[in-house]
Image: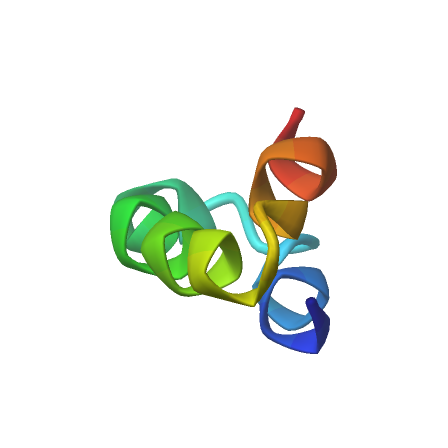
Length: 36
């Protein structure tokens, strides 16, 4: 959760999004909501 929020303000985070989303899904799929 905190990981996605840290890279959220960065536009380049889109490139690392695939890896971040995978980590978020492991935590509980929170990444989908954060990026959506």
